[in-house]
Amino acid sequence: MFTGLIEDVGTLVARRPQGKAAELEVQTSLPLAELRVGDSVAINGACLTVEAVQAGSRTLVFHTLTETLERTNLGRVPTGGRVNLERALRMGDRLGGHLLLGHVDTTAPVKRFARRGDDWHLTVELPACIKALVIPKGSIAVDGISLTIARLEADTFTVCIIPHSRDVTTLKWAKAGDLVNLEADMIGKYILRQREVAESAGVSMDDLAKAGFGGE
Picture 1 (tube, rainbow, N blue to C red):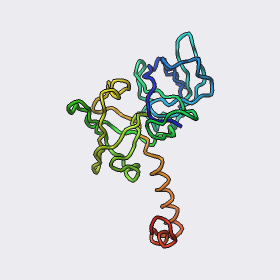
Picture 2: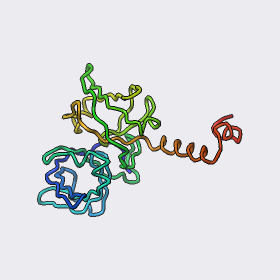
Picture 3: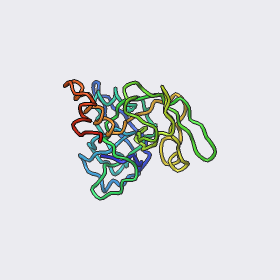
Picture 4: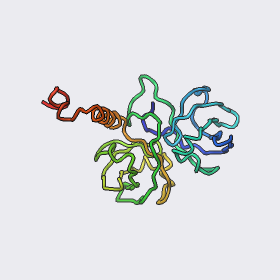
């Protein structure tokens, strides 16, 4: 699991195709002495497993499946491109963002990224597949960054970015048209799934309320 607080902005130094999959090599300033083969690291919010730690070149090597390349923007990052990195949460770590699984739901294009006073406003297209999972003031991960939805409209959502968050993430280079990874809050997913299962079993929300669930 992750928190959406980016630890480093790495550089993709190589992408080696392996059939429809690929091997990614990322240069990083993360403390390599603390990383082991088999550890989980989120790259732009996508949880990947470390396959090699190369101290000489300060790089980490990851294998990406076809599903990962198709569902995320990792297949589009060019060699030399920058990526957000976060190591998996450890027991006892401070939880400053929100809980993330590193399972990207979908990608969407940036519609606008503009400065508003001291802050920046990032507006992203809202894909239909996650519309039921986002709420105003709720949490969402954009390229692995834990952010709060400031404004929710029919087909877009907007998050406010403080200067620090922009400076220490790939948002420093963000622009309209960029494709970003999105992971909706897992709480919303469980609630939606519970409702779908109940409805498929012929149980209505009124039935649940009468049984003492979700109401007085």
